[in-house]
Amino acid sequence: MPALPTSLWSSVARKALMALTGLALIGFLAVHLLGNLILLTGNADAFNLYSNIYASMGSFLYVIEAGLVAFFLIHIVSGVTVALGKMKARPVSYEKTANAGGPSRKTISSTTMIYTGIIVLAFLVFHVTTLKYGAHYETTIHGEKMRDLHKLIIENFAQPGIVVTYVLTMLLLGFHLRHGFWSAFQSLGALQPRLSGLIYTIGVLIAIILAVGFLFIPLWIFLTA
Amino acid sequence: MADMTLTLKIWRQKDRKSPGKFVTYTVENVSEHMSFLEMMDVLNEQLIKKGEDVVEFDNDCREGICGMCSLVINGRPHGQEHGTATCQLHMRKFKDGDIIVVEPWRAAAFPVLKDLAVDRTAFDRIMAAGGYTSINVGGAQDANAIPIAKRASDEAMDAASCIGCGACVAACPNASASLFVAAKISQLALLPQGQIERRRRAANMVAQMDKEGFGDCSNHAECEAVCPKEISITHIARMKREYFKAMALGE
Ligand code: HEM
Ligand code: SF4
Ligand code: FES
Image (cartoon, rainbow over all chains, first blue to last red; front, side):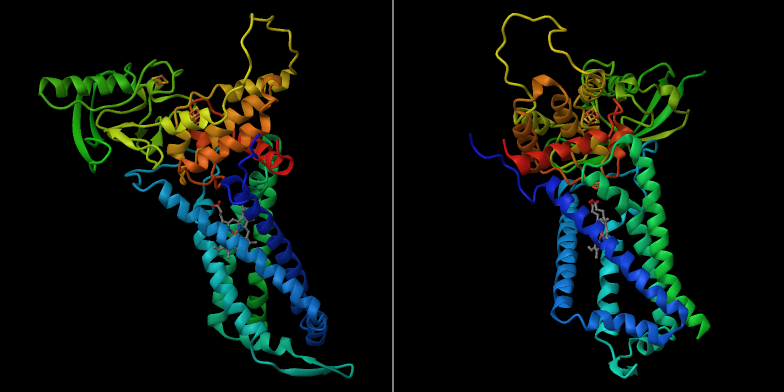
């Protein structure tokens, strides 16, 4: 008997890759947000000590970063494939479209995933270049020299343009996750009618917590500076 | 209620290759008791009397069981009613003076044959790729010879109610055929008779679906909302599990 014609790039497996990488990225965002909450204490040393944990990981940090980049790449390439495939699958569009309502999950979130995704990606490039690869200030805490990332962040978040960019992008990320979280479970075949509503609600909550959490930090720093 | 006069904006397309366009028609004397297709018949009779080319549309049983009728009516496959096919849609759902836009299923995998009729043989090829069980036919055995759990038979029956109309593809923003393929895979995966070819079926049918040029599933669930048989996307989740098993375990 010939081998089964399954493939990691089939429509089903590709969406599973998207879902797994998407959920992993949500996990990353959760850890990232928890760490960043230190910024709300206003304690510069505490934040710098925290970020120094990563800086002092050495080559292990590269492993984590490479993993993160790989997850993003898989997610982005499969996402773009879905978006391009959709255009190919319906070359002539409808004159009139309407939402069917009822059990449909089609929302402004679900139909704009590629756009919210691309904007988040553009934001990430900006975020990483201005902070991780931004100005390198130094500070000494308990006799140890380390990077003063706190100072750079405060400088950045004193600029209204940057704060507005963060707030808007994080709102869009919230829309991405509102459909994304639930969608990932369905892509993995994990949803049953009994669980669907609950998972969707949890997804909405996660979207709100992450979006509001991330946009609150720059806003708070700007307003209290 | 008095008879209605309606304005129809209908997609006319000479054949597969010609570009199509919308043509506006006025239909008078539409009774609220007519079905949508009967209203289309009235229009076609008008056209015949004028010596014009009739509007081509697919239909057969006109009672929601064959899956031949189609039509995207004001942006919704099978019209605004939930759980019915176009042939079961009554004109009492419309008002005198309404403007109704009527379009064919739009998908690269469902090319327009003429006007509102599309070629749905892509579904036949997906079925041929695995939507069957290979059992030698002998004498008919007793219907209760193979015990099947009530829940499994109920769910299999739900999946089996798919009439293969293609509204799921038409409604999907990505033109994905996931609901149709999932219904067919699910129906057999739930029954003892379907076990032998279970993983090969999932692998082959998904491969054929991809080959036909349908889009990916983004989990909009519009398909479930327009399906005349209200087939649940839980079957899509099962199709995914079946495919993962086929990937991990092979035959
Ligand atoms: C931290 C960032 C991100 C997180 C947490 C995230 C999370 C998710 C999740 C959980 C899903 C659902 C997966 C599924 O439907 O199975 C998803 C879908 C999607 N993501 Fe992201 N994503 C992120 C960034 C991006 C980026 C940068 C892009 C860039 C193109 C993108 C494009 C998409 C697209 C197009 C979909 C929808 C796929 C579809 O319609 O089937 N995402 N995302
Ligand atoms: S799943 Fe529903 S909409 Fe799709 S082909 Fe079957 S009956 Fe039609
Ligand atoms: S004509 Fe048979 S289902 Fe509508």
